[in-house]
Length: 145
Image: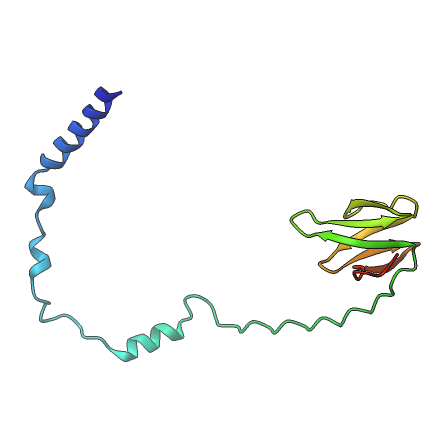
């Protein structure tokens, strides 16, 4: 291993020090003053170029249409209590049902009800029950189910 590393270092140093002056010399034209017959900058040229629309005509972006306010959703009347929410890449909701707590993910069906968890938010869960969307809010501390 040490032999390979030494060989690579030696090869790199050899290439560094063996470049000929042909490759490292500065071009003599770099130090020459500008030509006397060179055309000066003209504002008319810039205006002519900008009128040609090389990149297409500018079209302002349309303002986004304001979305209508969401319809208020009724609080669910199911006998369940939202005890907690684990909000992450795959959020889960701790729902108490019949005195037992269980963690549910989006799309799962509640145990004894025919309700499906549609959406899990930071402070509430949206349920689909009998074809209607209902809201299950996070339970207040100290309030019995």
